[in-house]
Each structure stands twice: as C-alpha cells, then as structure tokens.
Length: 577
Image: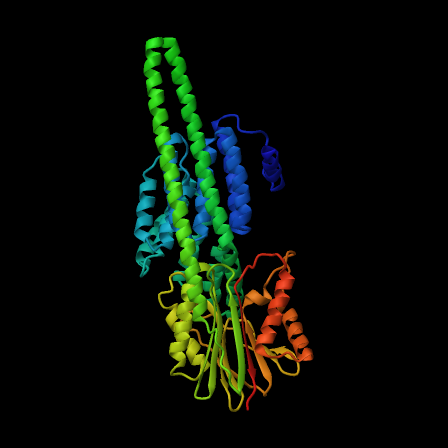
C-alpha cells in the first residue's frame, strides 16, 4: 500500500518511475529523484507537506533496508530542523549523516547539499570562519563534480557575509575565484544566485538585486532579498507588502505544531535506522553461525560465546536507551511545569484590575494560543491623560513572551517622560532594533487620550486599525508603517482626532480578525464591525460587555478548531464628566 502511494505521488508531480531500484546505481537515482521533489516542496510549499512525503520515504527505505534512503531522509530532517530555527538539532543530524556516510556509504559520490545545509547553519549563527573551514575540508575530498565545486565555492563566498563587520575585500576575492571556476566548468546554478544577490547588494546595484531575487526558488530567501532591493530603490510599499508576505510565510513555517512534527520525524528516523542496523547485525550473526557449523563444533562454541557477548552488549544499550527516555520524560514534565508558571507570571504582567473613574470605562483581556504568548496591552493615567497601547510580537512561545515583556517595559519607561506617541514609538523602535540578530519585531499601536478635551493622538507601527464605536462602528484611519524593531531609524508619524463623549475605542490583535474555522475561513474585520453595530443597537457598549460579546462570537465561529494565535482585546469608553 505504501509503495503504491509513493509511486502515485511521484507520477503526479512529474517524476517518471520505471521500476524500483535493482542495483546500487538505480537505488541512488530513485531516492535522489524523490529527495529533489521533497526539497522543492519544502522550499516552495511548506514544511508540513514535506514532512508527510519524508515519512513515506522513510517507511520505503525501512521496508527495503536502504542505507542510502536513510541517509537522504536524515538530511531532509536536518533541512526542516534548520528552517524551524532548531539549529542545534539540525547540526546534530547533519554531523550524524556525515558519520553515517563514512560508515556505510564510503564508496558513494559525495553530496554537496550536506555541506550546504551545515555551512548555512554556521552562517546563520554568525560562525563564518567555521563555515569556511568546513568547506575547505570538504574541497579536499575526492569525487566532486564540476557542479559541486561551483556550489562549494559559492557557499564559501556566502559565509563571508555573516561576519561582523563584513569583510568585503575577502568576499570580492572569493567572488573572483568563484567566477574562474564557473568559467572552467560552465555551471551557474541556483546557489550561485545567492552569491550574485550579495554582490549586487554590496555594490548597491538594487535593480540587479531585485531581478536576481525573483530567480531564487526558496521563498524565504527570495522575500528577504526582495525586501532589501525595494528598500534600496525607495519602493517602500512593495517592501512593506513583501515584508507582510514574509511574516506570514515564517509564521507558517515556524509554528509549534510543525516543530513537533519535525522533531517526531527525526526521532522516527533514528528508530528506523537503529532497527535497520540491528537487522544488519542479525544477518551478520546468522552468517557467523553458518560458518561455525561448517568449521565444526569447536568453532561453534567460540562463535556462540561471541554471539552471547554481543547480545548482552545490546541489552545494555537497550537499558541505556530506556534510562535516557525516562530522563527525557522527566525533563519534559519539568519544562511543562516551568511553562505553566511562566504563563501565570506573563498574565499577571498585563493589567487585570481596571480603574473606576467618572471619565472613562476600560476593560481588556488576553488569551495566549499556547502556554505563553506574545500579545500585550497596557494603560495608565497621568496628568489627566490616558496612555494606552496594544501589540503583537512576531512568532510564538517563550521568545515572543520575552520580547512582549521588554516591549511593555519600554512603553512604560518612555511614556513616563514623553507625551507624543510618535516619539514614544520611535524610541521603542530604536531600542528594539539595536542588535536584533533574531529579526523579531512587534506590531504596536500607541494612543494618548486627553480626558478633558477628547483629543486622541496616536501612532501606528504595523498594527491592526482600531474600531471607533459612536453612532455606528467604523475603522480609525491609520498610517501603514513598519512594525517596531523591524527596520532601524524608521520615521513614525503621529495622527490625531477628537473623540466625542460616549464613544468606545476597541483595540485588538490579529488573533481576533484572523481566527480560522474548520473551513479555513477568517473571522474578518467585517464581522467585528457587525458585532460592534449589534452592540450599539442593544445598548450594551460597556467595554466588558463588548469584549465578552466578541469573545463568544469568535468562539462560536471557530467551533472545535484549535486556537491558532493569541487573542487580545482592549476597549475604552470615553465618558468625559
């Protein structure tokens, strides 16, 4: 059944399959074609879809005892772990693949992708010298094709770009040597396009950079270079649009569920590979037993002793594996306990006690999608002015929670001595974008409401437009500017309007309007406005009643579908006594 499914998938995607591998050469061609197809799906469709294909490939290799199949599956798992940001796990898998190749595939042709992924891990960790050393060691091996030499030299060029500061002289030296090799072998593939992109960037040829970026097959890298090119060409709207697409792509790739699937795939590979090696060991023992029978009873006793010794050794290894599993389980329970404590601490950091005043009525809530989340809101009254904000950190989990804490602290610190929202946001952006190696950011809306006059001054940093509820519900006009922490020295603009008494301001994160039901349909801003108008007609405009009504509506909309993003809302009813 699995074989039929595999053949059907390969036929549908256009890979001709004449027959299963009959010898080593056909086996390598078969798995290499499969490997290339999965890589294409991984670069252009998504990790989750690729994991399903990897699972089929692993089962196929396990059923046929293919060491070359296990070898390629291990590299694919490393590729996914790298894309998920699990660099330590990816490096472990790649080093294990190199060792596995030396043990079982020493007569095979070297695989440049193995060194490509490992070098990229060192590059992303800003270990350029380590990446260059890795490539220099790889170049000493025999069996490389002309195409492989070009690929390895291109990786060597790209490794220089991660050094701080970038040694452009060294890059240009490697770049010249790369083109000498290209001229020699006549190959100029996709990996070289990355190098040409860096060359165009360093020579400020942004038109060329934009042209080259469109040729890159990997969606994430294509969008990064396109953002840099549009920024250099002052095509700000295109840069913003590309940035939004990049954000959506990375959040899809880096979600927690896909990380768990990637880790499970890697663990299943280890188990299958261990079983394959055990099967090889069992066959070896059987051959030894046959030789012992032929040679005589005396040798049989000797080989039986060896067999029992190896059996005992295997039992010890099995016990060690069980002990390690028990230790991992204990650590997992400890981590889950610590995350529950972290959730309690995080929820205590956002206001949960709301002031009772004659001039304003305010209420907010935050529901993280996972144990901890990256949403935030805050408010305080100073000199008869209400300072408030709402934000959504990129990503999920502990890193997002840490950045949420820093963002809230910066808002409090800068608002204590500054009354212009654009200056508050600009100072927060300068602080968060400094040494932001992880490229994390936060969409942020900051407002200051004069409780005497109703004058609302506000500044938006890539966040959703608030809803203004008076006689009817409508969206507050906002400027579309980069999120905070994304681009250093961004110029943020202040906007202002006058809020009439009995008007409610509803702020929310995209966990509300982008909530998905079982049919992958979004809750949408139109439903938010409809719910607000329904509240106007019912006369239930208190912030708490409004937020509780929206919460019930979105829960009814998504049904049993798992919450995909943090859900945060803040409502302010301006009364002005």
